[in-house]
Image 1 (tube, rainbow, N blue to C red):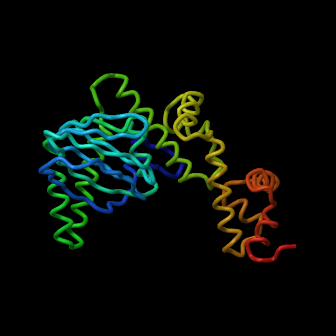
Image 2: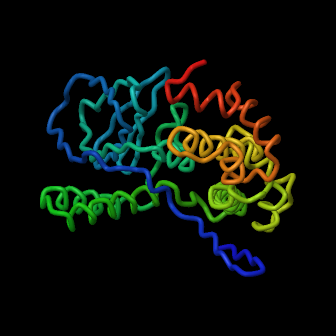
Image 3: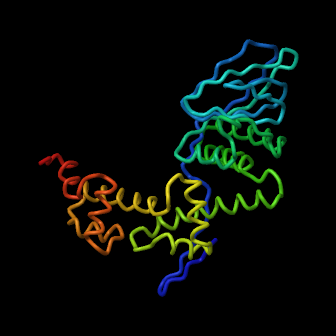
Length: 283
């Protein structure tokens, strides 16, 4: 946690796990004999854990599967799965979706290039899957909360440190710093906060944080802050009676002209043109 002291305020910024991940389905399959290869394609993200037996998951290349292995299939991706003739695979699976599901996979270092991962605690994973499916079968609000708890525990295992090395610790620290920077900007974009102040709050060199942020998010901190402000301004222009000058102040611009310039840079329209167009008053 980072504590930021203002003259009349103290705010704690806590790195939290992503919240926009939803459990869709889960199951277990016991394969008693060899079967032909299976094509897997789902609209959601599919995580599979090998309980016993052996197999192959194939995209452009082949990835060998053994007991205790996870493998991931990304949304709308097509892969082919083979099971061993002598020792067919038995496996657990769960389907998840949500804005942060892919982010969790990135943090777990799982991708279409590296889709297989050995579980850190396979016995615990089996136990969590069995509990998860039982909770789903019970089908009541408390049980569904417990099922989601099992899902999060397994995702936490996936995103946990693979070793106690300093490099892994450093990666974790860097990831938290980027997430913290996002939180701070989401909370304070209505003020005149900038990248230098965000770095000061986190206690990190500005240039280093900016580099980490760009690598992780694909945009600069300045552009991220700009997107937050302009998105909020668009919402207010569509659904409020505030003047353009009032909206500029509401999204963190002390100078009206700076807001006009930034809005035009992001949308190619002036705020008034955007408001008229969105309300069906094209001129």
